Length: 108
Length: 124
Figure 1: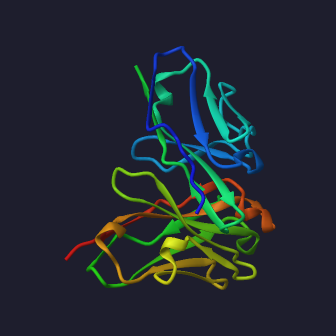
Figure 2: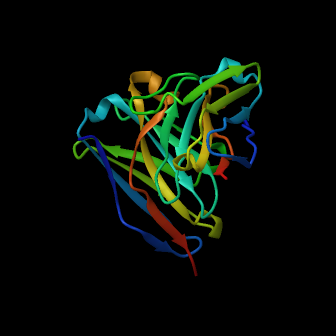
Figure 3: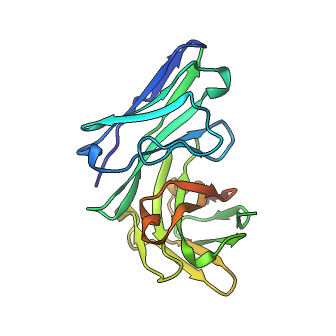
């Protein structure tokens, strides 16, 4: 099966930049989606197809990728960005969806 | 309004079967794939299955093969999931989720519309 690896946690001060990574074999060949899940809520898409930003998502959120790593970048972090962030792909070889383990972003 | 309305919480014994429904409304039911995702208490998201409502094609997470099935009723625009031979670690919130794009791209599309979730508790 295909695995996606995320750091379990990240702490950032308000106004700083958060970079959350997602690693997987040949990840650059897949479309990566990023989700934000705040406590007690269902997830929402913050980045789709590696770099796309859905309507309503602030420009402070951006996605990038190179080789086996995709990165979600949040500029000028705010207290309201505190959440767990998940990366997700579709793995054609196993015909399955895959989520990363999630990264809990704490705003100091 | 696009909506996925799930059935209520379930409590079941180990070894039993649980069935959860997910009624779709506000969009062309046949055009969008439906995925199932679960989240155990305090844990991350786990992908379980995807269904194409138009052709009834399905894919399942390998680790659930044989215990999990997804069906749909096009007349009532409802998707169902069944998980059998329940184990304690099947305790989780189960979500039905709509893919963001139509057609075959729905398998790899982002998951943009989430049901409210159904809490399944496995307890003796």
